[in-house]
Amino acid sequence: MNEKIKNELSEIEFILDKIKNQGVAYLQSLEDRPTSSHHHVVMNTKLADQGIGTQKTLEYFNQKFEPLMVASSGPKYWGFVTGGTTPAAIAGDWLTTIYDQNSFKTNPPGDVSAHIELETIQLLLDLFGLPSDYLGGFVTGATLSNFTSLAVARQWLGTEIGVDFAKEGLSQKLNVLSATPHSSALKALSLLGIGSANIIPIKTNQGNRESLDLVDFEKQIIALEGAPFILVSSAGTVNTVDFDDFEEISQLKKKHSFWWHIDAAFGGFAACSKAHQHLTKGWGHADSITIDCHKWLNVPYESAVFFIKETYYALQLETFQNSNAPYLDNKSGQFDFLNALPENSRRLKALPVWFSLMAYGKAGIEQIVDNSIQLAQYFGSLLEGHEAFELLAPIRLNTVCFTLSNPHSEARVFTFLSVLNDTNEVFMSATFYNGKRGIRAAFVNWRTTQKDVDRVYQLMTMVIAGISK
Ligand SMILES: *Cc1c(COP(=O)(O)O)cnc(C)c1O
Image (cartoon, rainbow, N blue to C red):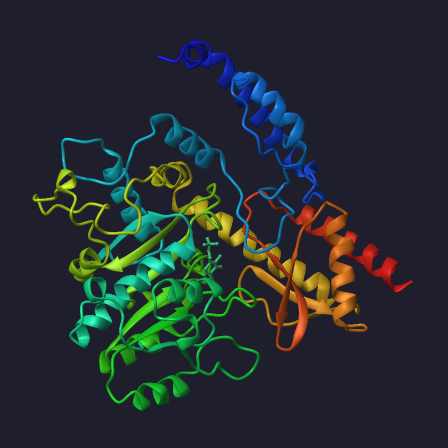
């Protein structure tokens, strides 16, 4: 036994206390921590023969990297779609590390981790008001969830035309239709050998919309002359949080043969809000759904789930079968994650989500979601009341997509955003929408309050005055 490690184990209480205290200090000062850091880190490329031990390593980390950690889980980080961390989620995440279970097999003898994961999936289905005839699992993010779902979609399409793509590989072009796919869906298509450039675009609806135009969709279906296809639809596009019409799509699904996938990475949480759940009406008929938990559920990275209708379990197994490993034999025929998703060994990613759901319940999640939506609307109303700003789209949920109107130029938007982000009090991200450079502010962090929005608005008016001089 390594003596150094053995000695450290005897000091584990002391070490974990230090980490706990540092963690508490971080979380309590998160509001004041900078939202970005300009740094030049000298990269260490030589590994010492003798290690310095955990305590010295912590000191070294605190000196070299800790000051550069940004408040991305703080209340005024509105870039991309960036969630924070709730106490319950942190508790579950820490325990995931401590227990270090491998959630890949459900059949005994073995640990209970896969059952925790299965239970968490059922609780999530209930949270979202989705039917219980989905199987699901945890992956690292919505990108991998899209990948997992579309991999099974590919296998389904193969079955329709008499080819087992998982075994035989891809030899022909597949039909994939979408109106406003997220970039990660395109990445999934390139990984799957389908090709990101092979999407058949569907027109978006008129009137500043990103949702798919049903008339054009049906036209495209007819043009395929009965050939099976995959539809990648959106519950919440990143720029304007637009939703495809799921009720209408489910009607079309009765008439035509296609795999229906919904990327609901963050928009799916509309289902938790009484005032907004109509946006997801009908989504329970989709064959597969992607949900991110590290965004609006406010659990730490990396956490997302996929839901795939259980009728396709055989296809899921064909796609992810981990064959030729006698020691992993699954003769029981019982469900396991090993043969149902990309990874083999896996962290118990479900635990932080399970803790969050247990700790806060449906009402707690609903409150987080409604708070974000209200703040987005409030922020939007402030911008609408100022001549320098212009909304690029109506606020449909939790994201404000806007630009500078007075005057508008690409350079001015970039200058404004970089000066604003350099205040280090807030972070927003740049975008491009409807032919214009814009800025996105996405509200998903449970900590954000109206006071934060007021402060950011104040900063924005100061920056506008500064760059207009
Ligand atoms: C964030 C996002 C993704 C990608 O999610 P990751 O968690 O970064 O992998 C996919 N789709 C949508 C709509 C998203 O918002």
